[in-house]
Amino acid sequence: MAKALRHRPEFRDVDPDVDPPGQGITLAIDRDTAARVGVTPQVIGNTLSDALGQTTASVVYTAHGQYNVVLTVENRFQQDPEILRQFWVSPSGGSASGSSASNTIRVVTSAAASTTASTSATAFRNQIANSLAGGANASTGSAVATGAETLVPLSVVARITPSLDPVAVTHIGYASSASLALELASGVSLSQVQTIIDQEWRSLHLPETINGELQSDEGDIGKSTHDSEILITAAILAVWITLGMLYESVWHPLTILSTIPSAGIGAVMALDLFGLPFSGMAVIAMLLLTGISLKNAILLVDFAIHAERERGMTPRDAIREACLLRLRPIVMTTFAAALGAVPLGIALIGGLLVSQAQTMFTTPALYLLVARLARREYGRNV
Image (cartoon, rainbow, N blue to C red):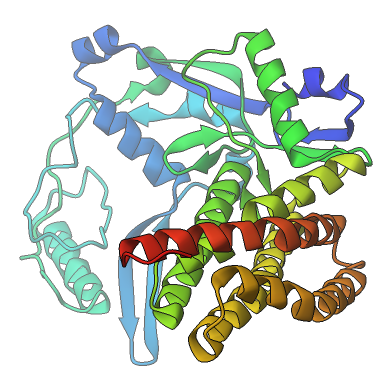
């Protein structure tokens, strides 16, 4: 995918986060041979963990604190992978035999020390070791293990071969992942990038088990677009409910909301005219544009309803007078908002210009249509 995207002029740079593999060691257990000599995979894993995993063997308690006794091989042996060929594992299938309450600090004695004096000395040293370990689970002084065991070389029950392994594996959730950092060329939008990635994805015939998503600094592109649609829809619904309660009608708010489509069309036309993408800034402009375009229609409808109720004017005369009286403040506020929004974006300006023209022509017509419907409901003519 990175190689394919590097050939596209829409990208200045494509930088994958996948590093070249590093040298590693693969240890494959020959289970048939291991079973014949009595060595289990658990024993091999425990042996390697004790030697290379820094296992805590015991804890020494003193009056000033506690200290972990770490079991591991010397550092000079950890640097050479050939140390694995010198490992020996126990075929006994587990830890050395002995009492379950044996002390964790083991005292090693010579196999020839079989006299009563040697046994007593060993028991005494075990008692001292138990005292140093805190005295928990103190043994009776008997040896930890009394039977001799035959060890098996690790190279007999496992194949040790060099390999190339990933230096690091990143994840998204429970799935391993890789990222491509894309630097876009000037004038390229994220929607164009998504289309290009989809085209290359299909041309490469990647397996169905591999999937991906385009993300920006604001997050997932698809999710951001979906959230923007929900935000705009919720804003329109809130305005409709508010105006319905204000005018005590469900029809006049629809007249006011009729200015939103023209404002959106004007914004999209302006963006297309200047070759600009529908970016996050354009979404902000659309939200501001919704409020301003609604304000222009409210100026007309509010004056017309007031003229009908307070002065007894017909809907035609009321909306005509509203257009004549409100034209100047609408034009002034429209141009003030447009000039003030020049740094913000072209979408707002284009939407205001188209919405301005639509408000002065279609809003009066819709107002008269709604008025006729309302009067017909009450049996009166307009």
